[in-house]
Image (cartoon, rainbow, N blue to C red; front, side, top):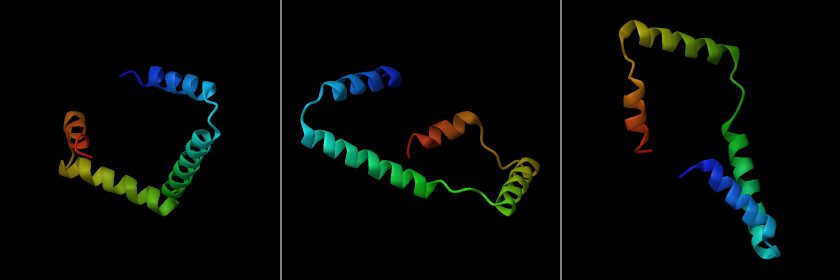
Length: 78
């Protein structure tokens, strides 16, 4: 499924929608999604940033990395 095509189909469907009840429910979903997304994303402090770099460099030195393919395979179960 091409995500761009699916988005365009949804936009077209919503544009033709006249049921205010459904539009109101979709707007509620949108607002909930935006709220959840904002709560998950927060700026990283400099200390967190440097600690992340240190962990990454340590992972490189110790060889505790996984390949791109391994990461993709693991993410299939999320």
